[in-house]
Structure formats: C-alpha cells, structure tokens
Length: 293
Image (cartoon, rainbow, N blue to C red; front, side):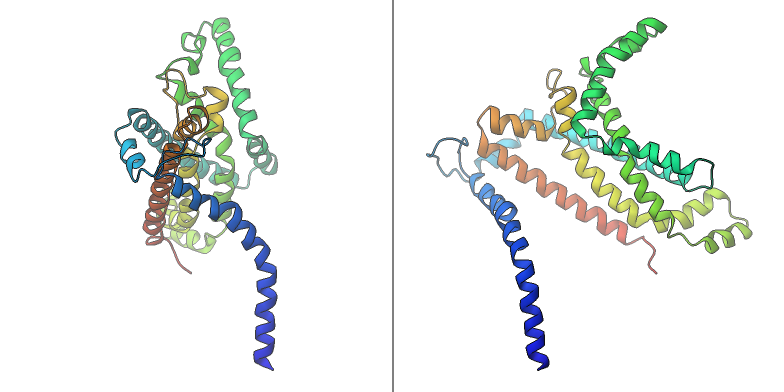
C-alpha cells in the first residue's frame, strides 16, 4: 500500500512538472542545441542551403579584430561596473541599515530607478548628455560639461557606465541590506567590548557574513556587464567609431544586419562558456571563505 501511494505521488509530481519541462525544453534547450549545430556551418540565417565547415567560425573569431575589440570593451566595462556597484551597494546598504530618520523614504527613493525599463533609462540619459548638460555647461561656463560625453570614443563608455550604475545599484543594495540582517548583533557587541574598531568589526565580522550576498552580486553584475545591450542601443548604438560596440551589439549586427548568422552564434556560445566558467570559479572561491552556521 505504501509503495502504491509513493508511485501515485511520483506520478502526480510528474504530471505537474511535465508541461513546464516540455515548454522549457522546446523554447530553451532545443534552440541552444540547434544553435550549436548551426555554429559549425556557414548558414546566413535565410537561405536553405548551407555547408558544414567545422570549427572555422570558432577559429576565425580569435583573429577577428572587431570581435576582440568588443571583448576588450566588455571586460573593461564589466570590471568597472562590478567595482562601482559592489562598493556603492555596500555603502548604501550600511547607511540604509542604520536607524536614521526617513529610512523608508530613502529606501524607496534609491530603488525607484530599478522599476524603469532599461531602454527608457537609456533614452532619458541620452537627452541629459546631449542637451541638458551641455546647456548647463554653457550657462555655468564649465568646459567639460559643454561637450556630449557620448560624442567622444574616449568618454562614451563612461557615459553608458554612469547610466548603468545609476539604475543597476538598486537590486544589489537590497541584497546587501538583507545580508546585513544575518550578522549577529551579539558578535559585533562582543567585538566592540574587546576594543575592536568599527572597521575591524566590518572587516572580520560583517564581510564574512556578507560573502554569499557578495558572491551573488558579483555573478549578477558580471553577467550584466558582459551582456550589456539596452544601454548601448539607447545611448550610442555601438559608436562613436565602434568604441562602445559591446559583444551583444556585435552579435545582433552580425546575425541580423550583416547576415553572418552562424558566425554570430559561435561567438555567442564562446562568450556563454566563458561567463559560466568565470561564474563557477568565482562562486567556488567565495564559498571557501564564507561563514557557515
């Protein structure tokens, strides 16, 4: 009887899981497998005729200066983004975790950018960089404000970064605030009684308890930095002179505008493998140092 009930329970679970598993396989797993197959061909995404060319697409990308430039852009962009968002989220989290007047208001205010769509945010900042700041610079006679930050290949990336950081710091800050709730107050009080400074309490007590949250933030921000597209599309579309052409923007242009579909897929697969490998490495290194209950 017990065995019959167990089998019935398993069958019930299978019935409920089957539709989701079917949709997941059809709309995610199957396209990935088909994409991997096409990455070994010269298909342009339209014609029915194509040839199997093996690893030529994968070999080509490592000598493609345009692809390598996009990779360099994304690495630099992701590094600066991680450093800025991680630092700001910890600072904001610590401040908003204090008993201060208007804490609820400030928590709602800093989270407001997160509810705006990425494209909308990009278009708003495009107007700010192109019209508002130059006018302000003329009015106040501030030289560096007179020029559109997005117009120069040397500064355009930083304009995108400012926009991304402004909107992207909200969710990590929420995670930090949640992580701070797990830090035992008695540990901090005991450390303070033993003469530990505020920095020492933060360094040796708070940070170890925040490591799981920091690990999650690093993975999320790394993905956002390496897959940035919406901000680039709304602000520069990859310009000027290709200085802000991210890997995702490059993939879109090559796949749908230049009809190099199979080549774009091979690039996407390579980048995905790198992101997965870096994320696994980062999580494993962080897990060695985090505090376990």
